[in-house]
Length: 247
Image (cartoon, rainbow, N blue to C red; front, side, top):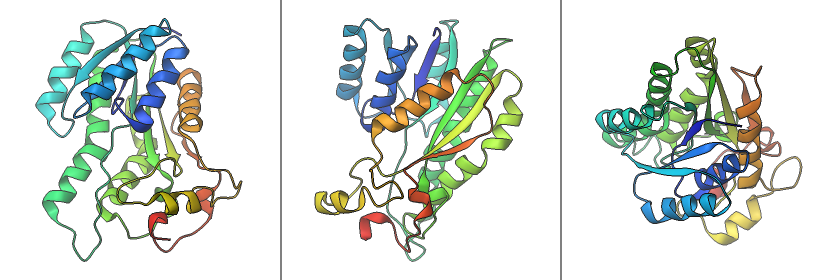
């Protein structure tokens, strides 16, 4: 593989795993971070130690001008062909306490930033071929009312995959992964995570590597676009009245 791929939220958790996995396939990686500079540097150092190429980019993805500044720097490279939208905010709220300002931050980061970044990718692509892969959550296929603004934002991202794929056709493919529970989130306890991690059809908990492998596959799948793919061991087929961290 060749070309530059920007992975958002690559300084920690899932984004870090995706960045390392794509680098093994030969992609040059843009390690985006906002508050996790130390983690981003560590990810970049691992990639470089393994013979890959990595460059750090800092930006608050809720700020359009910050995105513009970052993407103008990336565009100067001349080889930007891929975008993985992994950065996310997972703030707890319900219908009883939803706040418009807090919800707006969730929507800007989890929905609007990925779409705007895709636009910025297209602006400098020319006739080259590229891809956008969005990371969503199995909650978009197995909804409950917990983490309401997060769920609404990720639902928009996931179920907007077809529209975005059509908007960016023919040379940019757009797909979305609905990821299962991989890591402890928010205030979830270790005991709860151990208990619910494998509550899916396969009985095997989803790993960061599972999702990263799927991203790597889609990066080179030249004829797949507009797909929403669960990578969750069938977790989306196990209904839950509440978010798993409350089970």
